[in-house]
Image (tube, rainbow, N blue to C red):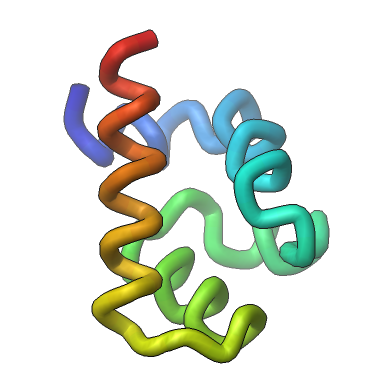
Length: 68
């Protein structure tokens, strides 16, 4: 699975993202529309973590979605 599939089916994946990062709001998730870089940025800002940590978390989440 590639990230384009996440973007194209964002409404389906949005709930799973919100389960993983519960502090993200529906408005924030609607605004980013599944764009990977924007998701990383918003996680970084919301949780006050380094960009590389946010990237790792998104990569880990994405890897778990590939197995589903």
